[in-house]
Structures are given as structure tokens and as C-alpha cells.
Amino acid sequence: MIIDRQFRDKIGGMVNGKVLFDEPMSAHTSMGVGGRADALIFPDTVGELKTLVSFFLGEKISFLPVGNCTNLIVRDGGYRGVLLSLEALRRLEIRDQNLPRRSTLKEEYAGSVCFYAQAGVSLSGIVEFSIRESLSGMEFCAGIPGSVGGGLKMNAGAWGKELKDVVKSVSIIDAGAKTREIERKDLPFEYRNLDLSKGTIITGADFHLVRGDRNEIQGKISDIMAMRREKHPLLYRSAGSVFKNRPNCPAGKMIEEAGFKGLKAGDAEISEKHGNFIVNRGNAKAGDVIALIDTIQNKILGEKGILLETELKIIGEDL
Ligand SMILES: Cc1cc2nc3c(=O)[nH]c(=O)nc-3n(C[C@H](O)[C@H](O)[C@H](O)COP(=O)(O)OP(=O)(O)OC[C@H]3O[C@@H](n4cnc5c(N)ncnc54)[C@H](O)[C@@H]3O)c2cc1C
Image 1: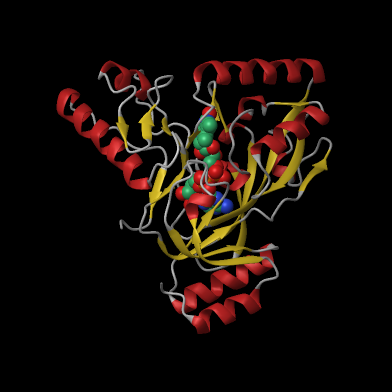
Image 2: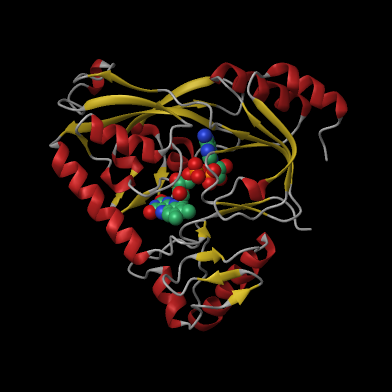
């Protein structure tokens, strides 16, 4: 525990939002595993977040932003430092009906409807908003349980589309605790990653979508949800895809061909339904999930010479 009594009092005085100390992360991760974070803080505003970041930088306290914790495993020994949840930042609003704010971007986004979403808005909230407003382009996010902040950091995607395709600019607090806005052309998106410098926190983003037919949008979303129910093990807790796919070589197929489906460590299991999911069948520990990850990586490296890279993020310390 690096947050002593004195820091607790100081931190408590800096935010109106919720502050939890020594908090078990198993209560917050979609996988339902993970040890205790020294602190888990839910700032109410970007201003509070900035104040906290400045304080942590000055005091050399490590911190990490988290969203809905749906692609995150915290090791069983917990996280030494502060996890900053952006859950309370939930503003979502249409910027204007047609025109972007900057004249240089007028042509690129002509005809688009632009809206702003803070980092804590859920991707499912945006999908619902796009149905309500008859906006097309965000259907691929249906069923992805993350937040705008986590989604952008992971460049979340499905069915051939990624968040990079619909984002116009991203608002951040940079590693020096300054707020900035970065335009799409300057954002280094990669497959399942937005390569921001260490310590950067995404506070929100502008998106652009096109007007569409509400029934068609709703229909596409229903089809996507049906495909997810058919292919993914949604009855159990998980963190989504464990490994990144390789070009022309889905990780799930490699894992299935290696005969791993159904393999267990404690209550963690490589899903029978989809090889790239590890599910929690009850009381799995982070160590069980990580043991399965190691087993898969070692066998596939040994047999095929391919190192499968994890898509989900693993943080914290072992017990
Ligand atoms: C059932 C299921 C299905 C899924 N399907 C998909 C899918 O189809 N496609 C897909 O891409 N993913 C999928 N996922 C994985 C996950 O939902 C996405 O990666 C999602 O975008 C993660 O968002 P989050 O808010 O939960 O991020 P978290 O898990 O909280 O964080 C993920 C990473 O982002 C960083 N981060 C979080 N918030 C911020 C911020 N504000 N600023 C900077 N960094 C931040 C964290 O430090 C961490 O490194 C699925 C997960 C589940 C459980």
C-alpha cells in the first residue's frame, strides 16, 4: 500500500466523486478477477481529474485510467497506485448538424453529423443514441461492453470496422497534466491500440456519423447481436478476446486446432464455444486466467513459432 493516511486525506479533499481505498478489482472487472487497488477514484469532472493527475505527478504516485474494465486483468496481488475510473464523465451531445468546428475539416466531414462523448459514456450508450438519432456508422459497436475512453485506447472494433473509422478528434489530459485536443490525422491508431504516450488520459472524443434510416440501423444492430450470441460465450464472465488475431490467422482458430478448448485452470476455462475467450466459471483467480494464457502462448510458440500477443491488458502484481 503506497497510499498512506496523509495521502488518503489529501485525495479525499480533492474530489467530489467516489474514492475507494484498498478496493478489490474483482468487483469491477468484467472477468470478475483481480486483487486490490490501493485506490480506485471516480472523479466527477475533467477539472478534478486534472487536479488529481498534477498531484500524483508531483508525489510520484503511479496512476492508470480505466474504463469499464472489460479488457483488463488485475493480477491477484493487486495494483500499487491509483486507478482512475472515468465512469462519471458521461456527457453526450450533438455538436452541430452538419459542419465541423474547424474550417480546414469542412470537406472531410461534409454531410456528417458530429457529436461529442465523454470518456465514461458506454459504447452501448452511443449505439442507443445513434438509433434514437437515426445515425449510421456505429452499429459495429453493438455488444462491445467498453467505454468511449477504453474503446479508443484499444481502438475497439468488430466486423471489419474500428473506432478509428468514426472518430474526428480526441480530447486528452497529457503526461504533463495539460488538456489538449488531437485531430484524427495526428492520432497513431493501430490494430487494437491507440499509441498515446504513457500517462495520457482520454477524456472524450468527437465522432462523425451519417444520417440513416432508423429501421435499417436497428436491423443491422439486431443482426450483430444475434451473431454475437451465436459465436461468443456470453453466459459466463470474460474479458472478450484474449489474444490479438494475426493477419489471415484468427487466434481462436489456432487455439482450437491446438486442442485447447475446454482446458481449465481453477475455475478459468478456455471456452468450448470460442477458443479466443477465457471464461470465469465461478471463482477463478487472475492467476488461473494468466496460467491458461501462458500455456497457450508457450505451446503455439513451440509448435508454430508464433508468439500470440494478448489483446487484453494485464496489470498489477502477483501474490
Ligand atoms: C463479452 C465481451 C465482448 C467484447 N467484444 C469486443 C469486440 O468485439 N471488439 C473489441 O475491440 N473488444 C471487445 N471486447 C473488449 C473490450 O470491451 C474493449 O476492448 C473495450 O473497448 C474496452 O473498454 P473499457 O472501457 O472496458 O476499457 P478497460 O478494460 O477499462 O481498459 C482497457 C485499456 O484502456 C486503457 N484506458 C481505459 N480508459 C482510458 C482512458 N480514458 N484514457 C486512456 N486509456 C484508457 C486502460 O488503462 C487499459 O489499458 C469485448 C469484451 C467482452 C467482455
